[in-house]
Length: 222
Image 1 (cartoon, rainbow, N blue to C red):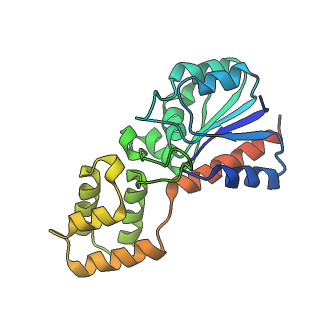
Image 2: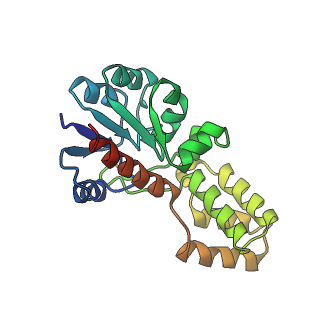
Image 3: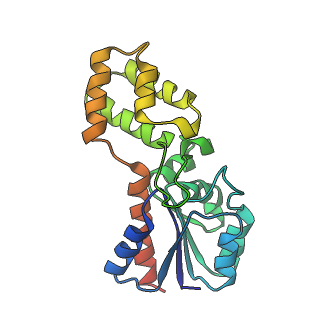
């Protein structure tokens, strides 16, 4: 087992994460697919010193158990969580020593986010490419669009509720915009559509990168 293990997939491509770590001087890291139940336990059991949980399965299989994170911490591993399943577990287990990184973790920790549904999405089982948009990204970009004057608070609220009403595998920006046609002015929808094509941000990706930055920092200390 490598000294450093990172579980990720849809939040950031694994090859990109590996390249990012190697360019940062971290040579003894392995990036693995989204974590299933037992993966954190096995990584700690086999000697991983730094475990970074970014992505994990939610509905496709059994998700990462709290007890296996606690087991890893008891074995002396540094466990970092961010972006998706990692942010959720870190917000629940930071009092026991798991380290949370990023805006999504902070939002869960403050109670601004509560549901697992905020970070849930579906992804290609072979490439791990996202096939839907997580609600947390939609929430974030609607807030940015409001701040830029692209939409008003009424449109923001109606569109967010339209997105939230969709089952998570069906959430996309286009489906949200279509659902909003009944209540949001057409010109506002067109402005938002243009903004989302060119200016939207991927908060889960940004938090994943921040987690890898933290891995690099810790790797230099241990």
